[in-house]
Image 1: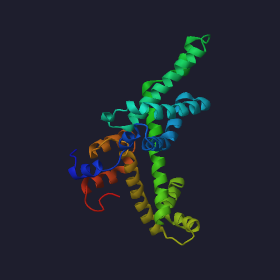
Image 2 (image 1 turned 45 degrees about the horizontal axis):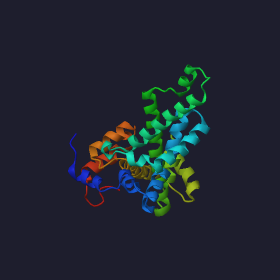
Image 3 (image 1 turned 120 degrees about the vertical axis):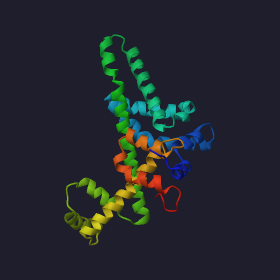
Image 4 (image 1 turned 90 degrees about the vertical axis):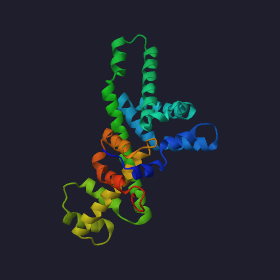
Length: 256
């Protein structure tokens, strides 16, 4: 697939989490603020993954706090931007954290049969990678929903309300949606309005999801962004937005 140079130029100017990560290194107030920004953004994804990996809410809470300590105290300095994906850095920190947790558990329970500790801590690497990807994907989607809701609050465009209603009632036809949304929005809307608004809302959501994803990459090209969307299972949501980015590039109004 041919990469559009103007699209790549647009992407290179968007702040990514690697940019914030660079700011987070050091002992300055700015560094601390940048570190907190990253933690706030991904704490939910971290805990979701740890809970799935450990099957123990208390242990997941404990390791989430430990992740935050390591993240702010020293692991930031070991991040390698050449890998290009922020999720690879987060995954590496978490995998080491879980391994340390199981080693500590083994030391604290010497009388427990070896096989019991191994079974409790063992995980198939492929399955563990998939669990992490699912957690990461859920966080990107959640962030996009929040961004869409914020956009509605700021602009008055009811894209969030309409798209969320559709997500909660996927089988409902547009005439019934119009009737229900008229009650919810406090104004009469028609079936054609619902269809048009849904189309615009999906486009807006795709743009926001594209932005959420590319922020986790280092100086991404359009092709690298597409590869990441495939890896995390989100390309189906973003294909039209990605095509628009590839063809529009830096033209005014090209990318939302």
